[in-house]
Length: 325
Image 1: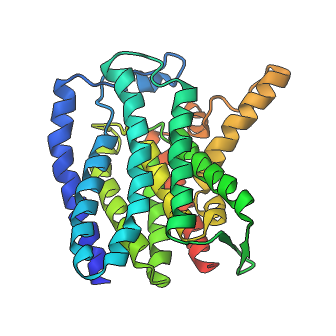
Image 2: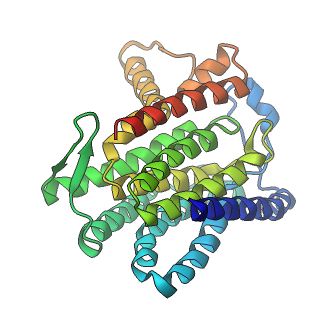
């Protein structure tokens, strides 16, 4: 257990140091958040707050992953090698988000990456990750069925598109959850902690190591992301965290468990789908605004209350997830 704590604390400390360096730089560059006029009016005061904070997560993850890869390569080459696909999918998704954020806030292209190019980039990375798992690392095509306590093996032609959809759906759900100070960071950190605890119980060292790296990085970032946020993660951070969650879940053969432990991102996504479908058919809105955290904001809930309750729900469902494994 001691090595997990050391990695987490090292990642946390590095994330705090990187944050203290990056935040002033982003402020000087005036890389500020722009708020939608149709969004909650309380968010207009956040205009100008530095965004692209996901850079902190990228830098911390790259530095610590490189350090641990070199360290483990000396005596445990297989563990070091098995870290590579998770690093690839996490950093890859973060870089797609970075390009989108860069175009929006630095080049002042309000559209950022076109949805088609953004999805293409994410899809290429997702397919590459799944192919690596199946063919290079021989991780198999079996997935764990919660509650039933058994695995089913999918045919290759079904597993690859299924796994890619899981990755894309997870990152999109996390992206939708990122809408108020500290929400996406808090929720995803709990989900990652759940997956890391399972890795420890199952004695899968590579996912334990990588989980601790990302958890520590997210906790360090969270110090500056809690309300009132000094920095926002942007798509750089939300796509990176989504990639980390999906990548670890697939590696552990637990994609279906995400329906339980990632219940908040799932609900956020469903709320948007319901709103769009009902509005197109009836012209009426089910919620005051979606994703659903904005609905609660407009109902009078303070941001800290939403973050606390959504995090508590995630914690409870994560405990359920651990208990049924």
